[in-house]
Every structure is written in structure tokens, then in C-alpha cells.
Amino acid sequence: MSFMFEPAVYQERRSCLVERLQRAGVTSGIVLFPSNGESPINYPDNCYPFRQDSNWLYFVGLNVPDMLLVLDLSDGKSTLFANDITMDDMIWTGPMESVADLARKSGITDVRPLNAASIRVEVAIARREPVYCLPFYRTETKERLSRLSGLSPRQLEESISAELIDAVISMREIKEPREIAELEKAVAVSEAMHQALLRQIRPGWTGYEAAALVQYEAQKHGCGLSFATIATNHGETLHNHSYDYVAKDGDLVLLDAGAEVESGYAGDLTTTFPVGKCFDSRQAQIYDLLCKVFLDATSALAPGKKFIDVHRTACLSLARGLKEIGIMKGDPSMAVERGAHALFFPHGLGHMIGLDVHDMEGLGEDRVGYGKTMHRSEQFGLSSLRLAKELKAGMVHSMEPGIYFIPGLIEKWERGNAFDEFIDYNELRRWKDLGGMRMEEDWLMTPTGARRLGPAFDKSRKAIENWRSQA
Ligand SMILES: [Mn+2]
Image (tube, rainbow, N blue to C red; front, side, top):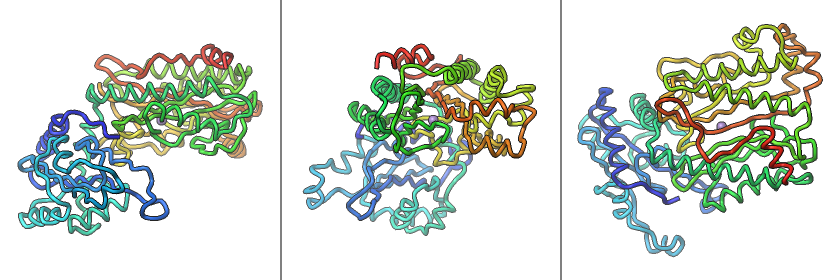
């Protein structure tokens, strides 16, 4: 991952951040942006694959560990603190660009060694200028920044700024055209990953083979995975990372997987399909309903509308469909208001996507998805909705309704006669072993509506069965 936009892109983003903070009344002080460092697995030299911090990628862009950017809010100047590699390092890493050359790619001319960072922080403190940070999601980043800045981990925690968080969210949530182009690439590769499995899985395949094929397809396109692949015959377990099964005719496979392109942008798709050539009649009924829910939800997308209302549209469509099938009963609107449908759809309709697959979740899921004025519901199901706030042109988010039959949850609700005015537990017994389905696409809000990202990919039952019968 060494892709970068033009240096001016990063310069402009940093000056935009300074402007937005000034507008929020933050006119002096310094912002500390630490890059990520290498993170050891079991001994110092054996590290997890390096993933740069997404805020750093957005404002600095350099995919290099162990750097620190100091942004001065009074004059808007950026200083990059980093060390050039030594000849000893180079024997292991190969030739590397100098820090000064790297800095130029981000539009930064002021470069200093890492050990000068604490002096810069001391100067700010002597001038009684505040220090600002974003939240830390890795303890080691906080500890490293503490060593570099001379501030204690506690002082760093106290430097976390709501104004800074909100300014960053307000910028990153609206995707620039160049970011949308990257997201289009990520979704295109993600589709290729899904289509590879849709084309190739056979009875007898293990989950490991399925997950390996998906990863192969990503890497073949020069991409990584944007999160750990879910490839399971038990889609009703929402984050099922077990690959320990053998696919057989009659099974449904749920694949939730996405590519991360070189620039760091993520795709996130879910497809559900039969291991055999067709859905059986029960699976077909539920899959057709899922397609209907998906269509109703995507048709409800509009700028200016709250995403929680689009989520409610999906829930209502689901409750109506389940009533037609006979699994639910009573008034669907009332059932949704009370939360009875959540037995079959216990998660939210979507989340923002960008440089993170759950975009900016490290800045606080509620701050990102609900803003300053909305609050998360405590109702089962709705409490898992990550995105609720008003949609704006330029936002990119997932659309991912699902229908699940979770035996343990069904039994628990039935024992307590939960919502028995809305759920026909007798009829439900016939469906309990069906498993789970989800359909997920990535959508961009436009000034007039919304559009799906990625090349055309028909997921109607007929189209899916067509893929499978050619397998
Ligand atoms: Mn998702």
C-alpha cells in the first residue's frame, strides 16, 4: 500500500481541518497525529501485517510506520517527525526513500527527527497552548506517543477533543470524487471475490477452501481483505468466523467479505446462495422476501432522510413479508414499533464505509452514526443500528438487511411467550432450522437520491440460480 493522491490533496485537507476547528472556536494549540507502528504477534520481529491508521491516511497519506505529524492551529503549519532508516535497517528492508522525500508527497516541507517532538510539545505547553488528540484504539499508540511527546498517557487521554473528533467526522463522512473512485475499485474487486465463490463452490468444499479462494481473488487483484471473511453455512450466527464445515447440497452459504484497495478504501458485500443448483422451496420464499426488503429499503434512500427511518422501512417490509408467509401475525407496524421483528433481524441496516470498513468507528460509533443530537435506542435490534443520522450527498454506507432463524433465540423468546401476539411460534417451528441470509451492497448518497457502487451484479434468485447451475 503505497498509493497516494497528489500532495495538494493532503495540504488542502489539513487546512480544511484547521478552518473547521477555528469555526468551532479552537483557534490555537497543536494537534498530534501519530501514525501506527508495527505490532508484534509473538516476538518483536514477527509482526501483524502493517495497517496504517485511517485518519493518518486521510490527512497525511504516507503508508509508513512510526511517524508523528504536528499540526499547528494558529498558523496551519504541519511538521513531520520521523527518522531516516539507517544502513543497518536497509540491509533488511532494502532501499527506502528519505523522510524529506516522503514528506514532499504529503506537501510537508518541515521535517524533524522523532526525538525533537517532545521539544515541540514543550514549546506549546510553555506558551499555554492546548494539545489535541483523537481517541486511541491501540494502547501501544498511546504509549509510543507518550514517549515521543513527553506527555503522560493520562494527559494524552485528557487531550482527546470532541471538537477535533467532530471536525474529522464532518470531513471524512463526505467522500470526495477521488475517494468514490477508490471505493468503486474496492467494490469491483469485492464483487469478483464473491463471484469466484458463487461460480466455484461445490459440495465437499470446506469453509477453509471457500475463505482461501476469496482471499486469493483479492490478492490476485493486488488487494487485501478489509475484514476477516465470513464464509459459513450458519449465516444465522452473525459474526461466524469458523471455517470448520464441509459444504453439502441443500446448504446455504453466506459470504460476507470485502477487498481493501491499495489506497486503504474498503468494500463490504454479503451474498447468500445455495451450495446446490437451486434454493429449496423454503429457502426460496425467504430469499425472495430478502430481495423485496432490499428493494424497499434502497428505494427509501434519499438525502435529507434519517438512516434510522430507512432501517424502519426495511423492518416493516420484513414484518409484512413474514406475516404473508405466516411466521408473523398482527399489525406489522405495531410489531416493528415494539421490536418483535428483531427476532429475525437483530442488527442494523448499515454503517458508513470508507478508509475503514466501519468507517471512523475508532472515533466513537455513536458520535459517527448518531451525531450530536440523536441517541441510540436500547430496544433489542435497534440498539445494534450503527448508522442512524441524516443522510447527506457524498456519504457511502452499506445496505445489509438479513433474515435469520436463530434457534437459541427463538426458543428463549418462545419460552417467555415474547411478542406472541406478533409471532406464530407454531408455524415458526417449521422454519427454525433454515439458517440465515443477508444481502449487502455499498451505496453512495447523491444530491438527488442514491446509487449502488460497483459493476452490475444481479442477485435475484433467478440470477443466483443461474450462476449456480453453471457451476
Ligand atoms: Mn457490513
